[in-house]
Structures are given as C-alpha cells and as structure tokens.
Length: 513
View 1 (tube, helix red, strand yellow):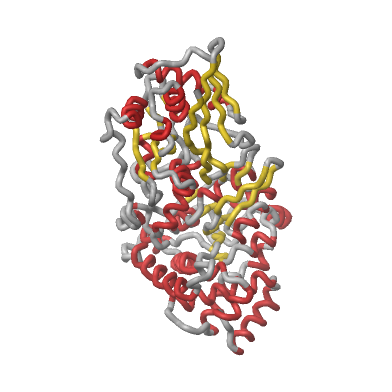
View 2 (cartoon, one colour):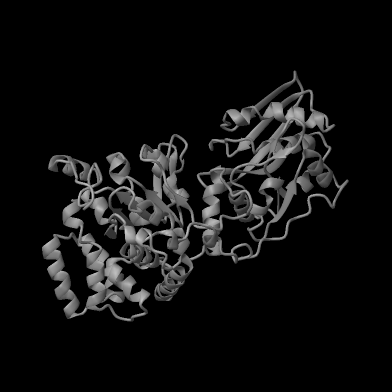
C-alpha cells in the first residue's frame, strides 16, 4: 500500500514542502530511502523502527521504500523521522490517509518514541502556510517559534504515541493548537536595559556622539585608538542605543537563527538586536556564508543587528574584501553549481583597530616604537574601498585619569536610544513606501532629493574634498552623515555646522590609506 505524508525541508533559510511517499511491498524485509538523502536521513530507518516498536506499533515485514520528493533536492537532517513513521502506519491501514494529508509533520524520533526538536521550525511553518496546509505537527520545543506564523494551526507533540492517537481519532483533544503569538506580544519589554550601558564608558564623549550618529542613521563606524581606550566597550554598547526590533525584524532574524539551530531558549523570537564579534582568524565562508551546501555566515547572523570586527587589520585581506557586497546591498548571494541562494545581511558594521602595530602611535603617555614601513604595512591590510564603506572614522584616545576617577553622572543608553528613535522616526516617514529604512541606504538620486546642500555647504565640501583627497563614495557618505546629524537635531535642512561635524568624522581618510 502507498501512503503520502507532507513534511518540510530547509533550502538555505527558507522552508520547502516535501512529500514523504511510503510504499510497502512483498518480499524479503528491506528498508530503502531515496530522494538524495544525507547520512542522517538514511539512518532514519533505524530510529523509526525502534520508535514504532517501543511505542507498541507494528513495523512491516515486507519491502519498504521511502521516497522524498522532489527527488532532485538534497535532503538533510533527522526531521523526516516523524512523517516516515506516520507514513508506515498509514500504509498499514492504521491511520486514515485523508486525515494525515491535512497536516505537515516534522520531527526527529528518539528510540523510545519521543519527538526531538529540529532546525528551521519557523521556516517550516511559513512553508506550511504557503502550501495551503492548515496544520503543522512538530516537536514541543519548536512550537512557540512556529506559532508566530498566521493561518497555521501549530500542534506540539511530545512523543509518537500522541501523534498517532490524534490522527486515529482516539484522542481528538491531543495536540491542541497553540494560540498565535500576536505582533509585539513579546517585544514590549526593553531587553536593551539588561545589557551593557553606555554610561559605563568613562570619558570618550566625542566617540559616544559618533556612536549615536551611527545608530541614528545606520552608518558603519571605525574606532581607532590605543589598547585599553574603550573601543570594544563602545562597540558592545551599540545595541543598547539602537531602536528595539519590530515584530517583522524579529521574525526575519529568528528565521536565520532557527535555520542554524541557534533559536533562543527562553523566547519564541530573537527579541534583542544581534551582536556578532567573530575572531580575526575566521574564514571568508565563516564570515559571509557558503560551503558545499551553503549556510549563512556571521554577516547573516548579524542581520538587523551589529557585526563587530575587532583588530580589523588582523583579519585576512581576502576575508575583509568579501564584506563589500553585503555592506552595500544588505544581502549575500552565493552561487554554486547546484544553484544559488540569497541570505539577508542588513547589519551595522563596527570595526576597531590600533593606529599602529604596537598601538601607541600618537599616545602621549607611551612612545611608539614602530617604523614607518611597519605602520604602512599594518594599515595596508584595510583597503581603500573598504575604508570608504565605513562612514565614520573616529579616534578614541587613551582615557585620562580625571575621567576614570570622575563620579559625575553620564548619559545612559536609554536617553540616547530615545534620541536615536526620534531620528529613525523622521527617516521612516521620509522613506515611507520605499525599500530603504535609514539614511545610510540612500542612493545618489535620493541624496539629491532628501539631502540637498546649499551654496555655503558646497563650498565647505569642496575644500574638504581637495584637502583630504576624498573619493566620490566618501563624499556621498559625508552628505548622508550630515542628513543624519540634522535629523538628530530635528532640523529640516542641512547646515554648514552639520556638514562640518560630518567631515570631522572622515578626517582620518588621508592618514589611514
């Protein structure tokens, strides 16, 4: 007898409907799985057989063939265990095929019959809705995550017996669907307050101002200063001044983490902005994503959050160069012989570096011992094109003792977040109906429309371009920065003062390149 059960698979971070076809024929006992299964899928036969027997259900003695369609798509993971087990029972006439056809099923089976969690539950629920299947049966541990998707009845299961009793009608009250998580249901609390606060950073008022400007306009930022000056502390506190994730952003971010098996333990969604800080030994695939069977990299795990690259010149130059596309486009496109995938990668890039190999160039307390060729070689690891994509270059000098010992209250993250949120609201209204969200994403035509510069401002810009040797991209960055500074102050027009502050954030161009 032939049975067909619906399941789901991951293609990158997206879900795809899979048909699990089970056929039982006469002959010597044999279990065969076809449809490009990986090792975990091929081993399903042993888990399914043990789970059925330990739950008190029969396993057929004949020749069993399981086909996972479409057959030309590689299948990986243990999430097909549950639909295979149910398909075997349907093929033996123990469960009605029409009842089983109304559900999509995913879940790994333990030998005792328990249903274990799988990767990508959120994407599976989206695929279930797109396929028009009204119900999704999945592990208890994945249910809350999937319940954010509308128009799908999410039914959590703890073991195979519950699923069989529900489908056979012996326990119709089993697998009761979870209520859908309403938008903003878990995002009203302020997760940023529990993290590091910007008030903990002593001194560095200019760097804090630059960080607020970066947060307000979604600009990338580079901190340059000696060891111990607070570069890492500043970067770690950037998420605390960014606006809280919207429900849509939280779903996008959770989808990436779910596909990687890194869903949050105590919440159905990722509710705080990600902060990723990969070590400088990371490979280009680890940073961007890819592999034989492409998976997201650190830039996608930082989607809607912050990617922090400490000790920037220590990264391999080839690794840094692959950052250009995601920084510009907000996505990563990976093409292999078997096809192409696109991963989201809209993040703020924060980088930190020393001014020289020893770190003390320009430090009034400790003399630098680096020769000019050493300094040039150190800085040449960061190319000019990548430097152009860092909107703000800000010096972070060593903290003076009077700042370290000061007990004066500092402005905390909550106050700065309020300023940033108001500037973001201005930008949201400005770009309403367009596929951009912050000033940093403006194109050339949009800069002319929303960031016009008057005659006095143009004269100031001309002098800066000639003196600093700025590129066309750096020129555009300055205008975008000035628009953000004006938004922070609630000004409708860009003034020379706004441009002057923006230029001061690019004053290191000639020295770095």
